[in-house]
Image (cartoon, rainbow, N blue to C red; front, side, top):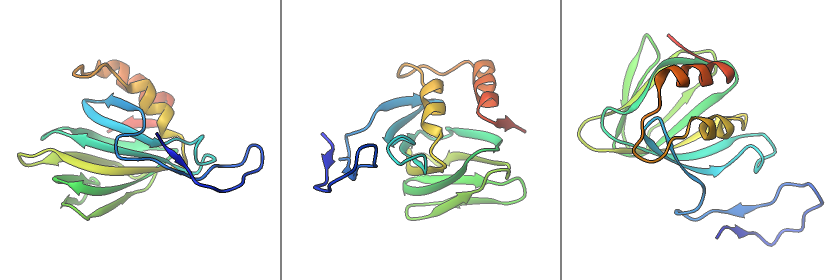
Length: 157
């Protein structure tokens, strides 16, 4: 259970919280195990935060966001980030900033799964992930994914 910190708050104000490792909604997003840590509602719309675990080869092909910036912090494994002109493999401790309107792709490199913290700013991505979520082990229909992405201002190259 999340811990509410002992901080007085006014009605409607944000609440300080600590979530433990196994807390937050668990989603299957594009085949990746995605734990929602904080939603836009939790942060006053400032950001959403997720912990994503993806298997080798999993990731997202070249795409562009029009509404969000993304920050990845790699915890385990290796993730390749491609911005269309530059490609970099990032290991544990690496951080990637992927601003809106810059086409990018990412995928897990090598033989082991990767785990990363993903922050999206502003905090609108949790609704997008919830809409993309499938039952565990099920891969989504890509035509439906493209339509959902378009509604959230995301296009594929």
